[in-house]
Image (cartoon, rainbow, N blue to C red; front, side, top):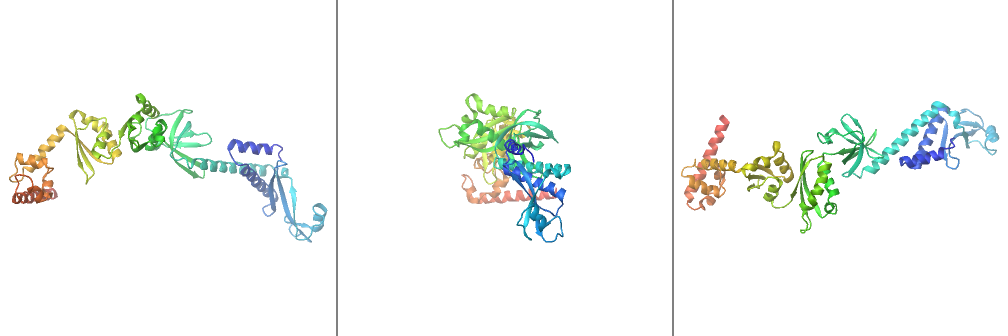
Length: 420
């Protein structure tokens, strides 16, 4: 059929990474379609690739009969013995080779379309099989084109897509420019395999550090938690499995070389590297870096921390538009209330004054209660009388009176709120 078909099949398989059998099956299917277009849908035909001859051979099968009723599927015994098989008997099925050149231009064109579609399907399956187990990997490609705000990335044999939501705000790319991204998902659909890429995913930051810091890729250092506002700031909490390894120092690198490589890849995104510790107040204090923390009050039940910082550190601790404290919350999982020393002092004074509403509690006693952790009317109402009477200067009778009075004040405040 085609003198160069054998070479064409081998070349196509090599160029597109498709198994030779898939290509020959596509050719056979295409030739069957072309043959039926020429000979009709009811004929019994088969197509086979002849590797030695380098061609697709098409055979039409007819049943040997004494009297022909259907010329498309039957052949007379006399004709069969004369042209095909001298020993042909009624009931035998005999195959006749059909000249493919007789199929006509339209049939051949249809065959070509089938081949193209089968090859595309095979390529799609190959790409899916190659990338389905690569979720979570970094890939480097080149910007090929832009579609509806998405960046289409040439990954070699495959294309990846970075949707607008996975792009870092204010980052711009040009056609042909190198782009590094993170494989979020691989899907198969009617149009082919879709490789979903991201530059905003928190794990993109983790993957970049795994490349830059051998101790992470070797499992000597763990990245415990990641918080990130893409293009602006990111925080990672790290810990070492070996106490002799400084996890923060390893991630920063000599003269900051390692972290700077990550920052450059993220086009200037600031990165804070935090040492992870089971000591929650210490962990939260580190997470608020670069701000300095004076002291921390922990509410385990509500998983909340009140963090007191120097007055000149408040804006640094909170960050622009609350970014620093917001990232610290994401990183640690604790609710964080940041206050300056001045704000804390004002709050303390307010708490003292509220306690002084109770008959018999003056400034000195309010301070004593405050030092024992009883810092509000609500806390006083909730405390056990035995605990309160254990404080020097408070008898059992007085303790119960104060608790009862605190409860009444809370009830009145609640009633006032309802009627307001």
